Length: 318
Figure (cartoon, rainbow, N blue to C red):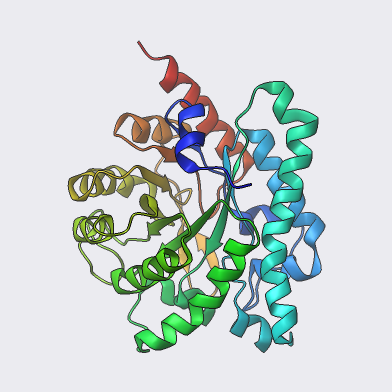
């Protein structure tokens, strides 16, 4: 039985804590992710570590978590040697692993602690993630809508039928691709959440005005439950929240990176953070109207504990 975002949000006091990076957490556990499959390699070869990451985020306070499926695509897994059936089974497995950990944690810890039963967000990366060349930070792939439709449709169906509560269409650089995926989710009758990635506080990487994105998606998409941004620099989030609020009345979810800069050629992060504590940022975003807050690249359980603490302070404010 699925649980709804609306009900979970209500039980959480109006602000959800999202989990953090799967990739960084796996690397900290010793996984080598420098390959075209990225975290999907661990899904295939080290599922126990994927389960450990999910558990650590629940214990850090996450009310919802993202499956290890961002870069788990049928074409990508077939390139790595899987058959169609094996690729589909791995995609389904990402939801099964999450749900297994969620239920075990709930029975052993969560229920007794009075926690919210966490939402399963099925992570769906853009076409650019499959290309594994940084294209999700550019958009404009040079492929037809039909290519994109065929790429996304079966994976979305598999994740939904596996029992995900929400399809999380994330790190999306393009309104065109987001609208196509929204239509596919509507056809499935699946609840979904769309999260864009942006190079400034007003535009997607492909150049779409984020207010226009919010407006276009909020119209005639009844199963869209939340909109937001991820994989962006923390200092951009406040402006993006303001612009998303100007474009629609949907709940807004934000889960930015910790602050470093990504090099898609070397697949490494570098640079320094801006000195603002992640939890202080999180509190600010809640004040500005975010209904869900978490972390993306380079964030780990300690960042999510800060978000949990920020939510506690936010809900206790006078």
